[in-house]
Image (cartoon, rainbow, N blue to C red; front, top):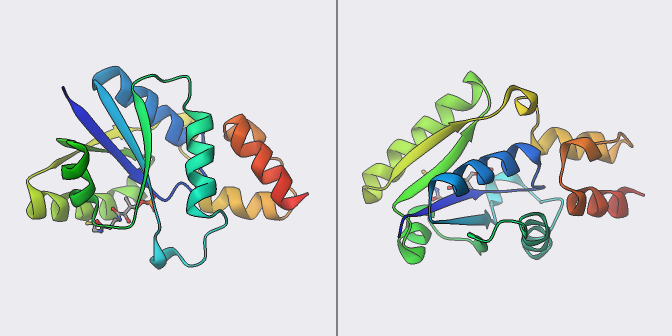
Length: 158
Ligand code: PNS
C-alpha cells in the first residue's frame, strides 16, 4: 500500500491545502494529513486540537485520508505511519527555496523523498497567514476555506 504524508501547520487549513490533499488522494492509496505544533511560528490562532477537528470535518468526503497531529520530526512521523513519500504544495517561486531545503534535509535524515504538487493558479495567493490577518480585521475569507474552517473563523472573530 502506498502511503503519503502531507504535513503542515494548517492554521487554518484552506482551499489550497484541500486541493493538494485531493490530488494526493488520487495518486496514493492512503494520505495522512498531519498538523504540527510549530513553536517557530509563535502562538497559533487555533489550538492543535481545533485544527485537527477542522481537518477531520473538511476531509470527511475523502475515504482514504486520515488526520494526525504531531510534535516530532516529520520524518519520524512518516516512518511511524508507513509513508514512503512526503507531499508538499508549491504556490510560487517564493515557496521553493524553503521547501527545497526541507525536502533535502528530510531526504538526508531518512531517505524519504518529497513530491511537490503545484497549486492551481486560483489558489496561488492563498496563505494561512494572510487569511488570519484578513479574518481578524473583518474581511470575508469564506470563499477561500472549507465550510468548517469558515464557521470557526466566524465564531472566533465575530
Ligand atoms: O505549513 P508549514 O508551516 O509550512 O509546514 C511546515 C512543516 C510543519 C511541514 C515543517 O515545519 C516541519 O516539517 N516541521 C516538523 C519538524 C521537522 O521535521 N523539522 C525539520 C524539517 S526539514
